[in-house]
Structures are given as structure tokens and as C-alpha cells.
Image 1: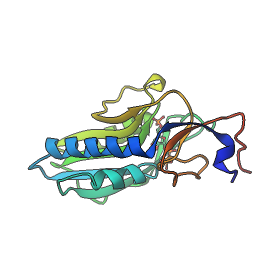
Image 2: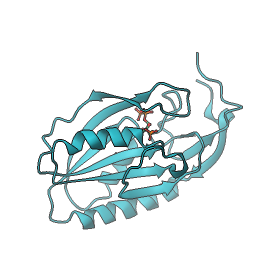
Image 3: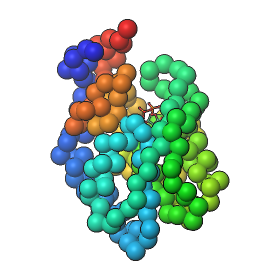
Length: 185
Ligand code: PRP
């Protein structure tokens, strides 16, 4: 894999800004769900880092489960709307308060798919928390209840978000200079 310094265009969100915003979201969610029995659902894989940090910024004690979805089909910058469920929840969510935690909403197709799927299981409530919102790329309307940051229409990586399955480890969110990025293989 190419050294990310070669294709990094701009750091869009620093680790300090991420930490501050995650602390605010954790506090807000804890307040909103105070006294409720909450189930946090981490959407794998991109949501791992955000979910882990968000949980550590909560003052409530939610249950945690995971789902793995992949959107696939076109290019390296847009999702096609084909969504595959790789791993479903272990938890029965009927009558439960559920909060989905996702790294980024782009076209909205992944979230729309999972929301439709989970609504049929009749949770008491179903809300969404995303770290990054690329609003201008929305193709399917989705209700997002908690947002970390709005981001421009750029290919982003870091803090759980991959570029060809790498760079998830980075503590910041950066954009890619596509002229300098060499796709592996
Ligand atoms: C990414 C991201 C969201 C989705 C957003 O997932 O984590 O789930 O794309 O795009 P959309 O709003 O256009 O549907 P990806 O399929 O890359 O899987 P990953 O989380 O495992 O990296």
C-alpha cells in the first residue's frame, strides 16, 4: 500500500475536533436515553472506531451489537446501492430502543437498507448517529438524528474509514488527492 502522505490532500477533521465532538455526542445521547434500555448497533466495519470512542463518552450503560453491511458495485468513490448483509444482529430488537452508529452517510442507500430491514423487526425506536454526513451526495432520503460533521463531496479516509481497506487506523479524517492515489493491484 502506498504511503498515505503521498495522496493526502487535506486533513478535514483533526483528532482534537473529533474528540471534542464525540464527547458532545456521547453526552447528548446519554441525556436523550437516560433511564431507557438502549441498544447501540455498530455498523461494521467503518463504524468501529467511532462506536468505540462514542461508548466511552457515554454516561449510560447500553448493550452493544454489530451488523456488517457492504455496499458495492461501482468505482472507488461511490456506492451503487447494492447492499449485502454479511453479519446480522444477535439481539432481538423488538420493543427495544436502538441507535445505529455509522461512520459516514453518502448516497444514503446503506442506511436506508438497514433502516428498512430493522423497522420490520418492530423496535420501540430506531435512531441514527453518523460521524460524517456528505449531504450533497444524498440519493435516498434518510433521517439522521445525530451528526458529527458535515463533509464536502470528497473521498475521505481515516478514523475507521478505509481507502481500499487501508488507513482505518489514522486518528484524523482526511481527503484523498485522486490524482496522486495509486490503486493497489
Ligand atoms: C461505507 C460506509 C457506509 C456506506 C456509506 O461502507 O461505511 O456504510 O459506505 O455509503 P452510502 O450512504 O452511499 O450507502 P462500505 O461498504 O465501504 O463498508 P465498510 O464500512 O466495511 O468500509
